[in-house]
Length: 59
Image (cartoon, rainbow, N blue to C red; front, side, top):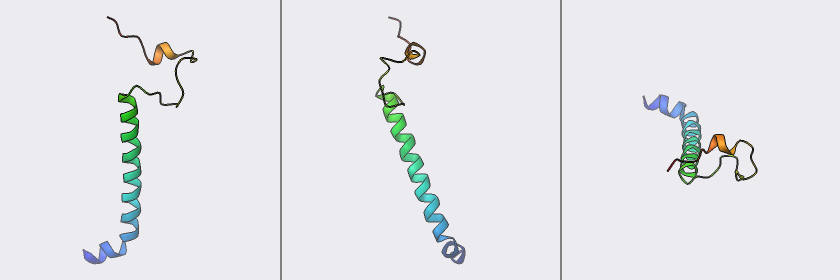
């Protein structure tokens, strides 16, 4: 078992690094979504489809 870990240490480190980056990207997207930010980086004021993406809540 230890031999297998040593032989594949580089692969394990790369996989863990990629998994960490994917996790951070998803976490950032969820955080931005909860804050009401747009995924494209610009506001929805000039977007023709703004009413479809962010529908007004009924009161």
